[in-house]
Structure formats: structure tokens, C-alpha cells
Image (cartoon, rainbow, N blue to C red):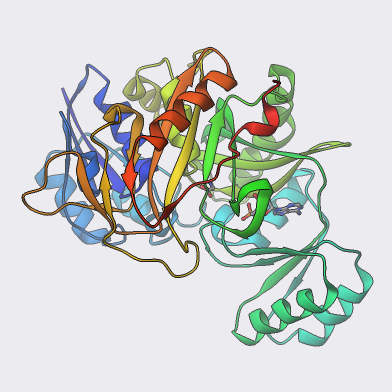
Length: 419
Ligand code: AMP
Ligand code: GLY
């Protein structure tokens, strides 16, 4: 029986912990730091920062951990995987150097260019390049896509139609010392593709759609993600195969060639343009909230799948035909300023369909009563034989939560449901 360590504290890590807990080979799942909503059955939590590399190593040894899964990018860029590998501990995730596919947008563009992978045309500007950046904006046609070259949890991207607003954002960003990319706006439907990559070996997982903007009809600023569903109606097997053949495979090969082979989950953010799928970003990890919907569809034993991935063994990841959708409950005001400590009562919900993120719990509270502790509080999910049913169940769940000063989008999946 195996002891598992999951690094992270959000809904994504709750989903990863549950996938491990389902395995008959698993004795315990320790989530660090986790949150109180995750504690159930084999799953426990321990307070420790996700980027405390030494602390994590000590804990893994003390608790006789057999396999570690690193969820968030902050831990990856701190080199948690590098340190675990150096000590000969089994760990899922990319090294610091390989995680540059996410942490440096310029590096990701260089890899794609060298690998012949289709992505939006772009120009890169450093803090001293203000004049050149403003001139470039004058050459471009709206909408303008401005991406800060730093980890920003999906929030460092601005898409604006007004030229003066674009210039203001660029000025502010460059004078704050950030580098940025001005990127061609790609028109088409967006989807996310997930694979497990180890060197040149790729195990395709599945696809999901997430909703990054805060308001209905994709209005307002970008967030970490306000809802998701899986699979995706307009993505068939042949499109998935194309993504693996033309994008994930070549990028994996290129990373090996550049001396920084990739290990772990590779999240490819794509837009299906008229000329086929083009990459908008890579993330060096599972998505949040996509993981909460995709792992519910996974049929393989999670430990078997990850051990095959680490050993570069042949395995096919299988997903059920069921549809899963989820809606995120956020504190009103997120992604800007928001209150903490809001009471959340899930007495009327099915707890197994809830994935907790920014929650705390008072000492004497019952299992159904939490206090909010972050912008994204939890995700309510639903399953069904089709997307429409999955969405309905997810909304029934979220409506049954008793919470004040909270907000959720009302249009998750709506555009893809035929009445
Ligand atoms: P990113 O952090 O790069 O995923 O960007 C956040 C969101 O901005 C994406 O999920 C897309 O919805 C949108 N986006 C990013 N780049 C582009 C682009 N080149 N064209 C159109 N939309 C984009
Ligand atoms: N859902 C977007 C992300 O995980 O980056």
C-alpha cells in the first residue's frame, strides 16, 4: 500500500487527492498545505508552504511517501521536482528548467518556433523598450493581446480593443519592470488539451473547456478560471490526435533536444482557428478548475497511470463517455478586492461533488460549515449523459449552497447546449 503526497491547496489538488484516494493501492494521501474541505477518508492535510523545498523533502522522508504529485506552478519554479529527483524520490512534475514552458512566455515561443508548432505571431518587449512597443501597437489591428512575461495565474493577459487603453497597459507594465509580449489575436473556439509527457513519450489524456473571464458572455478581467466542462463538443478524436502529433509530440522532442526534457502534465491552451489548432499558452501542470472535471472521467487507476508515465511504459489513459461540468463559487469582487471570512454552508449539497479551494474552518464547525479564505472558494460539479445534464446538475448543486456576498457565472456551457 502506498503513501502519497500532493503539493498544493486548491480545487485542483482536491481533485488529484480524490483520484489517488480512489486507488486500492493507496493507504494515505497527504495534501500540503491543502485546505479543511479536503479532509475525508484517506485524505489528510499538513500546514507547510508549497515552495518550502527542504520542508517538503523532510516531510516526504518522514512520512515514507512513495509518490509525490506537485500541483501548482509556484512549487515547480522553485525546483521542488529537481530536489525530489536528486534524492531519488518518485515525483510527478517538470523540473524548474522544463517548467519554463509556463514560467517564460518567451521561452515557450522559442520552443514552439524551433519545433514548428503553430502559435500566434508575437513581438517581445523588455522594460527599456517602451517606444518600440508603442510603435508596434500603432502597426497592429485590434483587438490587442498583451501578455506579461511572468507567472500570473492566468491573470497577466489583457485583451483590449481601444488603442489608447492598450498603450496605457503597455506603459504601466513596462514601467513596473515587467517584460511583455504583444501577440496576434487568434479567432476561434478555445479548448485545453492535457497529456502526460516524459521525455519523448506522450500519454494523451483528454480535453476540457474552461471559462477565464469573471462575467457572463466572457466579459470583464481574466481570473484563474470560473467554470469548466469535459469533454468538449467541437473536439473530436481526430483533432486530439492532431494536437498530439503536431504540437505535444514536437514540443516534447524539442525539450529533449534543448537538454531540458519535460516530465509531468503538459497543459496546452489552444484556439481552433480556421487554419487549425494554434497554441495560446503552455502550463507545466494540470489546470484549475479543469482537473476537477477531467479526473472524474478517468477510468484508469491513477497510481498505475502515473507509474507507467514515470517508467515510460506503454499505457492508454481511458476516460468515460460521461460529461462532467463545474461552476466556481467566488467571493464577490474577485479577481480584484474581495472579503474573506464569508460563511459557506453546504448542508444541502452532495459533498462528493464539491471541490474546495479557498476555505477555512472554525474549530468547532461541522463538516458542512466553512469560512471563505480566498477569491475562488469552491467548485460545484455535475455529471450526466450529455453536457446539458451535467450543467444542470452542477447548477442545482451550486444553487443549494448557502452563501452571502458570493458570485458565480450563470452561463457555463450554455453556448454549447442545443435547446
Ligand atoms: P493565457 O494566460 O495565455 O492563457 O491567456 C488567458 C486567456 O486570454 C486565454 O484563455 C484566452 O481566452 C485569451 N487569449 C490569450 N492569448 C490569446 C490570443 N492570442 N488570441 C485570443 N485570445 C487569447
Ligand atoms: N484554468 C486555467 C489554468 O489553470 O491556468
